[in-house]
Amino acid sequence: MGKSRKVIVMLLCAVMTVGLLAACGKKQNETNPSAVGTNGNNTAKEKVTLSLLTDNTQEQVSAAKAVIEAFQTKYPYITVEHETRPGGSEGDNLVKTRIATGDLNDVIYYNSGSLLQSLDPEKNFVDLTNEPFMADVMESYKPTVSVNGKVYGVPAGSTMAGGWFYNKKVYADLGLSVPKTWAELMANNEKIKEAGMTAVIGSYKDSWTAQLIVLADYYNVQKQAPDFAENYTANKAKYADTPAALRGFEKLREVYDKGLMNKDFQATTYDTGLKMLAEGKGAHYPMLSFAVPALEQNFPDNMNDIGFFAQPGDSAESNGLTIWMPGAAYAYKNGKHVEEAKLFLEFLTTPEGISATMSAAKPTGPWPVKGIELPDNVTQVVKDMLPYFATEETTASALEFVSPIKGPNLPQITVEVGSGITDAKEGAEKYDQDVKKQAQQLGLEGW
Image (tube, rainbow, N blue to C red; front, side, top):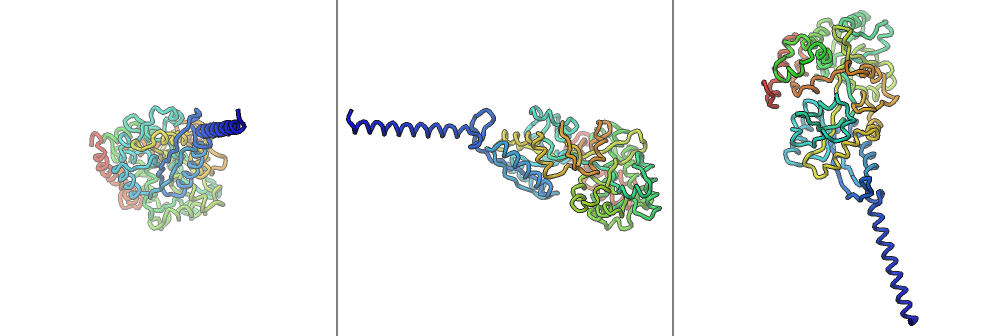
């Protein structure tokens, strides 16, 4: 072989070797999780972009960002684009419009309970009933995201409770004990009033706050009338003709009749109510535990002075807590990336995903997922709630989570009762009439 021919052969071999190395390198990158992402079986996954829609509240935005970051670390081939919507009816209308136009996000955070019905989950959301990760979601939560026996959502936050915030300093100064019956609570209120203090903070300028005494009484309703939710939904029971249910309206009116609220309760706002509680200018505030983040932000030095107890019934033997289940995450049934959307929902049920959420939004109650422990730095209010969760016997989901109907005018009706304009019976009758239109719109039998 001539010298020139040898050189040509060597050059060809070198080119072939470089080509093979390049091909091998390309093949390795295709199966390298850090390069594209895999499904755990060393199989290359195509890059996907998911769209997530949440409320625009600071707490939910912060939590969503933390979850997205953790999720994308675990699944680097999935990019999650976060979009927010306004609260209230404006946000609801946006979701419904997108459903109508087939343009809903791949995953949305939305209400659980009665408000879910309006989105027609069977038609629009992915059925999660038989997904393996649903085994970790507590059974008490599943009915709040179910329709006709099928489950459509996973928890997107912690539970809340409805009950009574109280100022522990006031209790200590007056030698009071946490009440186990309504009579004991009213006796405490009388002692507080006699001491020249506001016993019960009223903040009816924000009308929704007037509902709490009625809504937080549902544990006591369920104890005395276990079939109330079922019969109420079927139009076989009413607030006005069920003594246990009427009792909540009676308690609300009694607080007014005994002059226990601040004189300007009709002009007082929710924010002012929290300030009165934190500073000890009001001893009690009937409220949801979702107020905890606002209290922590605005009154960090007063948090150890604020405690919480369940709204008492008429018997100490059945003292328990009415709880509000968190909103949920749902996967859009007609989305382009349903499997990846389900991966996101699954992540929200894992310790890793829940830890990410809690890192950005401190929990307002226990998490409705098995095996999840709350961090040590939760507030005293949340710690006061925990004993009620020790058994299922001492908690009950609020009525709106076990019945699809909730009348839109309850805030206005409870303002009237709580202001002495309407008596308890008339208020209950008004509310029974208020739910009728909604029940008919939902097509419920018996209406």
